[in-house]
Image (tube, rainbow, N blue to C red; front, side, top):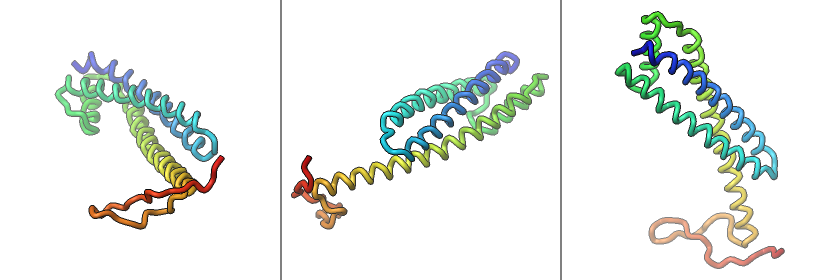
Length: 164
């Protein structure tokens, strides 16, 4: 069976590597956009493109899971190594696929890290914006009263400090 699935697997890995590299580029562009002001539209466009790339990478994961299942292997890193060993035993050239797989794992790890950094930046910008709006609306910087359930209560009486 591996003789039939390996060419497909080789192509899947190659395609996934290209997708992951594109995702890394988009995440890098997003990081740059987050450092600049007035880039909301660009960030929204990048987010939409990232979503498409992630969807395609999820499809790749489903396909690799199916390939591994044909060899009665679970979907994990050790199983991929076993799959490549079986392909080598069958006389197939695996060096390029193994290198692509390793590079794919490296790029995916970089994407994860960069996505977490971008998420933290977005969270910080969101909190800053909320705090700025609260100041403009006349709300205190932080809640100073608590309800019977122990949760902070917002100031119900606000007055606008600035009117445009």
